[in-house]
Length: 109
Image (cartoon, rainbow, N blue to C red; front, side, top):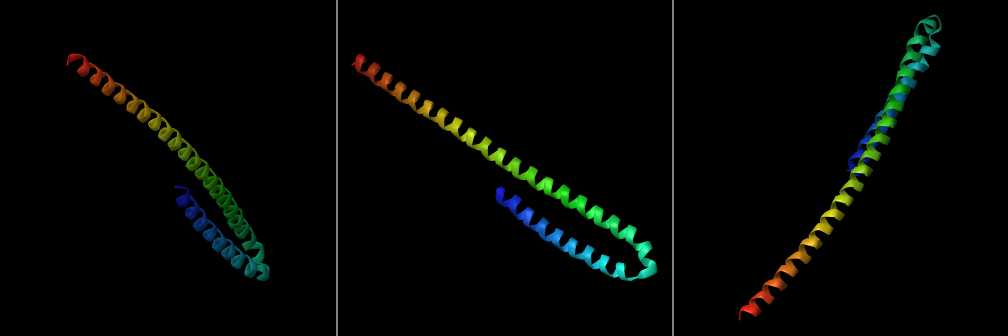
């Protein structure tokens, strides 16, 4: 499960790097345009701000997913431990039943 989150994080990081390169590619020519520069800068800044928000949201999502995976792992370990305890108790009970059955058989003969 943690592998899935790690793969997701790696893919998101690759996507964010691509988006960052795209924003830089868009911003550089806009700065050189002169008169159109004043018209384009607000749009480029808006795109940059949205990109930063998306990047932050994805970072929070990945951190949340990692913590949830770790909590699920701990929960599974607790369940396995409890199942092991119950299995051990069941084994002891079965042995006691067999011992009592043998004693009862010996008394009858």
